[in-house]
Image (cartoon, rainbow, N blue to C red; front, side, top):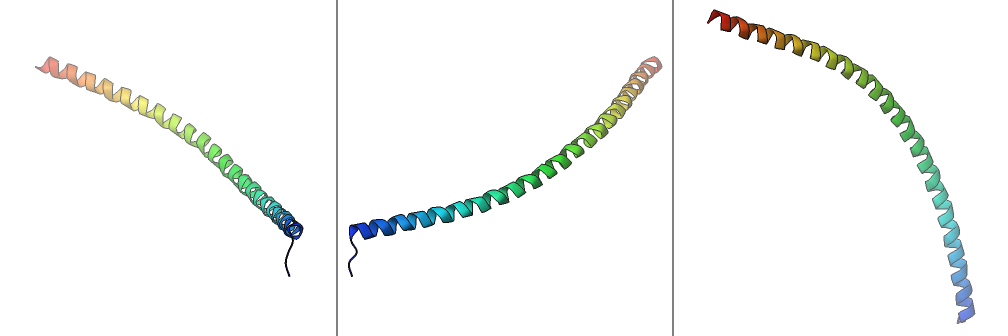
Length: 88
């Protein structure tokens, strides 16, 4: 049995339509999966944003305390130098 050019064109058209339909179904599944992943990343991003706010608050408090202690140390250092000069 020999296939004519028209038969081959029909088979080709049928195969292309079948492949296109399968690709559409696969892409819809992939898109749905990516939507789920995006939702999960949105939740993680929100948690990171919450943590950033908390850490910023902590760092601000620590930074303020460090500034106070640094100023106090500098004052002590200046006083010690002055006392050493007087004693000399």
